[in-house]
Image 1 (cartoon, rainbow, N blue to C red):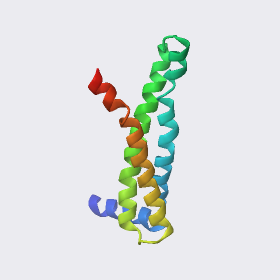
Image 2: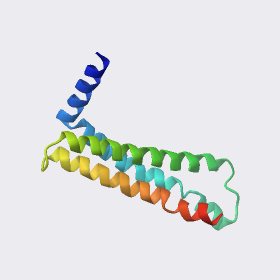
Image 3: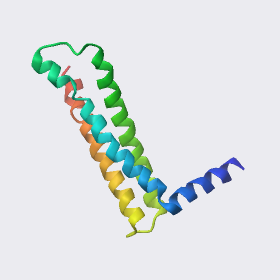
Image 4: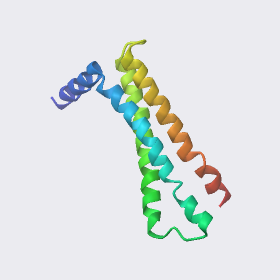
Length: 117
């Protein structure tokens, strides 16, 4: 019974495009959150410690990761449920691409920092 209900819910989301819209929204939201992870730069330029603002930076980076991964997952699911060439399919594709780019922007600069440390 629960599996039937879950399938019905997903099919309803796919039919009216909410899943594709959510994918795009998550992909777009990931970018400002990613920018928050660079909030330490003004402190470094001024030669000051980040202090308690460190938590805002960590939340921004974690939020960007979560939003990007969500955009990728929702985009893949929405693309499977939409017909090629439709507005829903394009919206889901843009959400998928935005999520992938945001994920690369968040993870990319951290890899050399982790490997170099």
